[in-house]
Image (tube, rainbow, N blue to C red; front, side, top):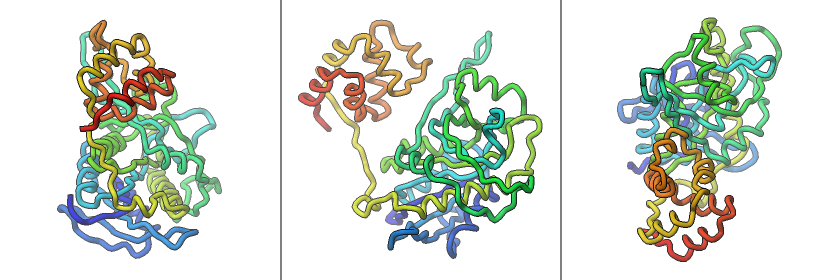
Length: 347
């Protein structure tokens, strides 16, 4: 990791998304970093004598792989506290509830490309990631009050609405009538589809410094055969002005935390504690799996009689044992919380 540090990295996939963000940054400075062109700018807060140092990065290509690589490089070079993915996406129609140009803020990001191909069809093995809770709550409750610099294609004087929910993230541009219903069969609360959030969120999650992640995009089409580019420029502008105004509205980084990455070393318990825990967890392993959003296909692969050990190892492999006490407290298993409190040992 280099000594360069910043507060916020904004990532866009396409040039038109990047250009939309640039319209709302003050005097952005173009520089080259790791063979990429990036833009730096200071973004002052509206009600405080402080500002964010912002870096804008655009891979110029769609896809989770490109987004993941770009995010990893941004973390390595700039050591940001916040990473925000901004741009355009396909929406899921729902009567008069959603319109083109509306904003989508992901509450859950479902990576849907992993699958098993069998003679009877494709068995999806979806992976779920979540944005930072504080950023998500702030964005969800922040009204869209910014004036866009690109007019609505339909000429109407309508402020975009904000929608939160499940976003499916894959590697395909969707423009058919089958894919959305298929995804909805597993995720009934699906509100949108796109191609970068899973890769970016996964890179942030796996980073040693764990920057906080948020995805904000605007609906430019309905991911069906009528898909076209008519709303793309406006949708990109909507997402850009919303994110910039959100960042300007309040400091999300305390001075004490600024540029101090929260590095969590793997949490280690002795084998004896693991055995005791698994013996006493019992049938509550199913509630624990639901609490941590362990995909159903993972649970189906757990060996019968050893589900507790399998869940422990699933959490350990993802460095999620830190959340075990909070989960057990939620499940009212104070006996197991006390076991971990008394016996845990951090390596």
